[in-house]
Amino acid sequence: MNENKPNCLLIILLAFTLFNSACAQNSGQIYLREQKLVEKSTVLLNNNNSLIPLRNVGNLKIASVHLSNQFASGFDSLMNKYAQVQSFSVAGYTGKQNIIHLTNDLKSYNTIIVQLTEADLDNNQLIKFITDNQQQRNLIVAYFGKGASLDKLNEVNAPIVYSERTSEGAAYFSAQAIFGGVAITAKINSSITQRYRFGAGFLTEKTRLEYTVPEAVGINANNLQDIDKIAKEAMVEHATPGCVVLVAKDGKVIFNKAYGYHTYAADMSDKITDIFDVASMTKISATTITAMQLKEEGKLNIDSTLSYYWPVTRNTNKAGLQVREILLHQAGLIPDIPTFDKIKPTDHSADSSADYPIKVNNGYYLRKDYYKDIMLPAMLNSPLKTRGQYVYSDLSMIFMQQVIENILATPLNTYVQQQFYNRLSMQTAGFLPLYRFPLAQIVPSEDDEVYRHSELVGYVNDPTAALMGGVAGHAGLFASANDLAILYQMLLNKGTYGGDQFFKPETVEQFTAKQSPVSRRGLGFDRWDPLTDHHYPSELASPESYGHTGYTGTCVWVDPKYNLVYIFLSNRTYPKASSKLGSLNIRPRIQDVVYKAIAKGL
Image (tube, rainbow, N blue to C red):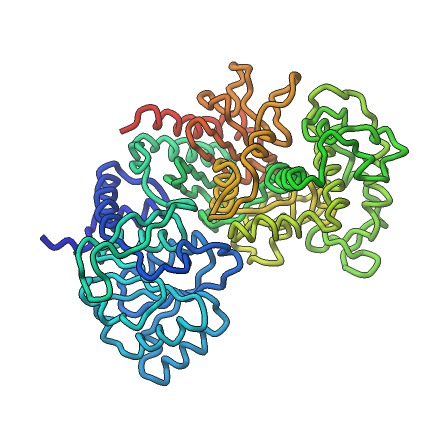
C-alpha cells in the first residue's frame, strides 16, 4: 500500500472545499480519513522555545520557502488565511551565490518557514541556508518524508513539523499546525534517528480557526447545498449583485463561498477574499469591543453619564444620559441627523485644499470643521423624545465614539486597528480601505447619482459616516468574511484567540447577554428576538444568539449553543438600495439551512 500517493479525490475536495465551497459527503469522508492518518503521523520537534503555534502573527513578516514540494501552493494558500505570507521558490536561486541572494531577499522577514521533501535534503546549500538563518530570525521547517532522513537535519535546532506522509492533506495539516489551526497530538512512536528517539516531540493546542470540511463537525456537506440555491435566488431576483457566506462551527470554518459579481454588469466575480462595507456591523466590530476593553480596564463605567466623559454635552439635554442607555439604544436619541440634503454649495469642493481637506469621495471634498460647525450641534441639540424606550439610533454609537476617543486621546480607527485587527491578524479589516487595498478587492456599495455623483468603492456608504471622513462609531468598517470570522470566533471563545486574551469571559458574557426589560438588546450587540413570529435572526437560532446586521446587506450571528459563527456579506445597496434581500429572507434562510444540517448530522 502506497500511503504517500496523493488521492485525486482528496485534491479535488481540498481545492473546492477549503478555498471556495463545501463538497459531496463522500469526498468529505475521504478528507477526514486522510486527516486522521496525517494527525497520527505529524510530530513537532525542537519546539523548546514554544515558537509553534505562532503567536502575535500580526506583528510578523513571514516568508515561505520551498524547492520541490509539489503541494507548496496549497500549503502557502492556507497559511495566508492566518497571516500575509510571501512565497519564494528556491528553484530560482540555484547555486551557492544564488542562495546568498535568497538570504538577501529575505532580510526584511523576521519569520521564515521552509518546506522540505526528501529530495530537498540532498541540497547542501539549502540546508546551510536553514542553519545560517535559524540563528538570525524565527525559522520553522515543515518536512514531509521518511523519518530516517531527519539525520540530514541534525544541525537544525529550529522547530521541525515532521510528517511521514507526503499528501495534500499533510501539507494542509502542517500549515495549520504552525498557526495553531490544528493541534499536534502525536509523538515519535519508534526511534527513527539517533537524535529523535521514541517519545520525542512536543504537543500543541488549537488556538485559531481550522479550515476543513462539514463532515469534520458532523455535518453532511450535501445538507448545505441549499445555501447555493438561496444565494443564487438572491442574484436572480436582483436582491444583491453578489454575496459571500461563511460558516464556522466548533472553531472550524466548514463553508466559505462567494456568489455572483461585484455589480450587475457581471464583469468581476465576487471572491471570498473581497472586502465589503459592513455598515452597522461597525457598531459591534469596532465601537462596542473598544468599550468592552475600556470597561474591563476600569477606564469606562457604563453607569456614568455622557457629560462625565464628554464635557461638551454638559449644557445640553444629553448630559445625564448614561453610557448603558446609549449602548442599549434607550437614551431617547433620534435615529440620525440630516446629511447631504443639508449641504450647501460652499460646504464642498471638487478639489482638496487646506479649506476642503475631508475626502468624502472622488471629486468631493468637505470643508474643514464641517462636523464641528454643523453636524455636532445638530446632534447635541436634537430632541430626546423616547428615553427609556428602545429606539435604534446611529447617534448612539457616534456618541460612544466621542466618549471612547476622549478617554483614549486616540482616534477610534487607529485604536481598533492596533488593539484588535492587527493583533488578531485580520488582514483586511479596518476603516478607510483605499489607503491599503486596490479597488478590485473592494466591493462597490452604491452608485450615488444624487449627492456624490460617483460609484462608491472603498468610501463608506453611510452618509453621516461619509461626512465624518469615513470614520464613525456606527459605520465605516470594511472587512472580508474570514477576518470577521476571526473576530467573532474570539468572542465565541469568551475573549481568547491565537494564544492571546482580549477579554475576560465575564466581559463577553455581560455585553452579549440580554440587558433590558424593554428590548432584546445586549450592550451594543443585537440579540435573538423572543417574539417567535419575528424569526429573528432566523427561525432556528437559539436564544443565546448575538450579533448585528448592516444596511448594505450584511450580518454576523454568533450562537454559543451550537458553537456557531455565521457571516453573510453582500452589497444589496448597489446600484440602489433594494428591499428584496429582506423580503426574500435571504440571510435568515441561509442561516436556517445551517441549523437544519446540524440537526440532521451525518
